[in-house]
Length: 287
Image (tube, rainbow, N blue to C red):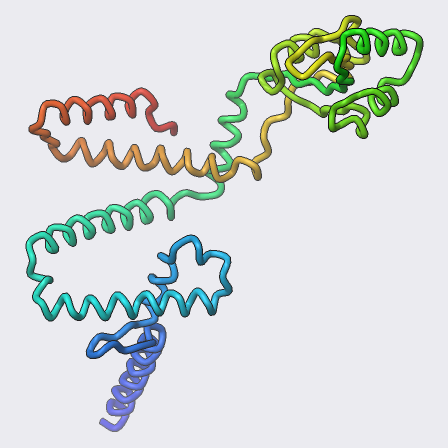
């Protein structure tokens, strides 16, 4: 019998410690009249602070969040006193907010929390493999104001002058100190006249006639031509993750729609809804 009492006392002590720990985790941080502000509420208030507070130190953000939470409790208390919780418009709004929060919680559980790094990496590799090869050119240029200046530079190049040195000496572009180096670029990055001339050159050659654009007259030299490397996983990881989550979300919606009838009474709204769904079906989730 004594042993049974000891077991019960031990169990009670363990339960007391558990309850105490749970209470400590959601401790009351402030009181506003009869209303309490718990740590969990303060955490929510911090998570929903205006973006202007983002750069503030954590302690200042905590104070700002607490101040806002106190303001909310003060006026919420007054609203309760006036019986506004029983107002039909308030109840309707709260029902809508509750549905939205349940939607968000379901999305987090079945989409965000289930999306793994392995899935994202696999999707990245699949998408990159499907991308068409795109060429990029590594070019230098010398920019001058007149056609005669450009022709004179071409003569000097024909005579054996170094392109980079001439660029430093003659070019009016801001990259003249780098020998006119433009680095690698793909089609669509430069003005059409410049791009057409650059991609027509073989590596190691330069334009034999000046290239006129809105900026002046160019002499262009191509250093290299290659297939553009794909974007690195680190650079596009978040965008790819969004694609994976989008497909999972659409799959969840399709499953939900197949089990529940959606009936829209307004003809215009019905057509608009059907159009949106048709667009989604044209780009089905990728497995």
